[in-house]
Figure 1 (tube, rainbow, N blue to C red):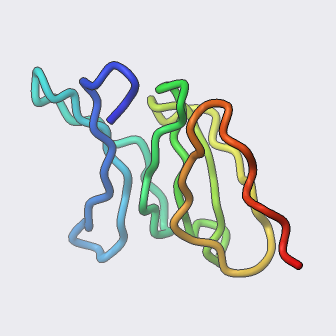
Figure 2: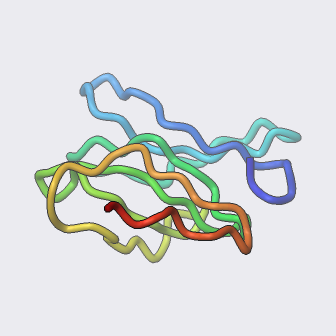
Length: 101
């Protein structure tokens, strides 16, 4: 849920077989589709600021991590190589994960 506890982000499989990301206002039930492209857009996770989402997408051909505002604007690709999935934000002021040895 977003920081105000009123917005729920989820992915949903369309009849075409692709997945897109939606945000629902739980108090009104209003649902807004915030991605719509030929790739699979899945596993949204809220940023601690409650304004941004991070998610995985195949919109560029391989599974990569993207971020955008909760209204679907300002999409930005964060990873460009490898097979990246299941992103999740760290809580505010959390330490980064330890470096591999």
